[in-house]
Image 1 (cartoon, one colour):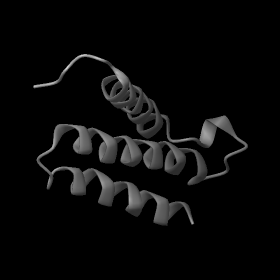
Image 2 (cartoon, helix red, strand yellow; image 1 turned 90 degrees about the horizontal axis):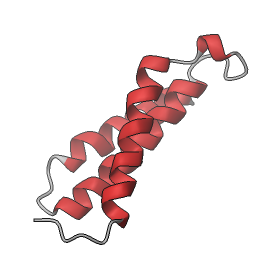
Image 3 (spheres, one colour; image 1 turned 90 degrees about the vertical axis):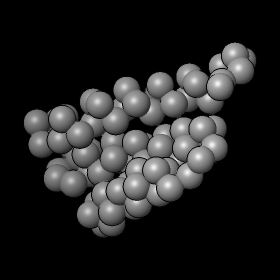
Length: 78
């Protein structure tokens, strides 16, 4: 099942590059990042922290928070 979440994450990330609206790109990318975090946790034994894919989880979690920040900020984006 985790493999399918990884594929879904890839679809979101690649799909975001096909769009022009920055807000929509950030929203789609955020979902892709969240899916990659889930993938990194559940690909192996999720109960064992040592088997989590930290190089996948850490950057995607950070990017998801960056996208959330820009999606919720009140500043107008150009």
